[in-house]
Image (cartoon, rainbow, N blue to C red):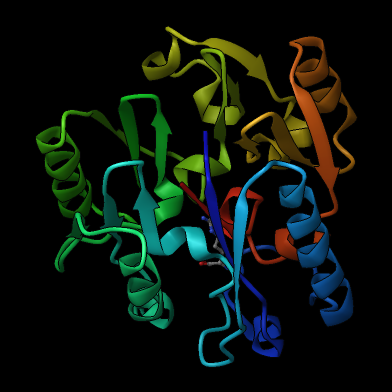
Length: 253
Ligand code: CIR
């Protein structure tokens, strides 16, 4: 069960944030509406939500997930692997100190983006990507193993972040796309396979009783419903334009 969620409003500078897509410039008003819809979806999930104000100095900082990885026992403050985002952690640290005394840090030359870390019960999967390097992944693995968890490091082939292509829905079930569909690391889980044309929907979140899923991916929606999960759909076009999915927009603990 998650009790707390941290989100951060997007600022106007979001429009100048990082992207690898060619989906066009985000529309700021639609972006704000979509962020509100995300918060409204979370409100149905029986959690306390801390909505942090926007910080124009950090265009990508609405994607709070990349700053930290949180468990019920400890926090790991990440070291985001792109310079324009690296200091986002400085803002998040005092917020996390209100909740945690047991805090660990990824340190340079190790880099980890929280989007590269998936927790499935007592096991962490850590992707090596353009943002997370081997040194960072090793530091992360050591920290969690010292705290009684297991960890597997997974070099990514194409995905932006590990969680761009996989989500854990609970009940031993993963939602997988692309290079993770046949990846041996996930063979012990029940798999729901996201078709190529719906790849973006592979990034969703399970928050207590609900799976929150991007709107408009009907094949994925139907499969998740058929597996007996309760689903809330939210619009995400303006986040998608900047490589962001639903997990990126919150810290859940
Ligand atoms: C970035 O390039 O960092 C942002 N535009 C997107 C971050 C997405 N975060 C995530 O997948 N955890």
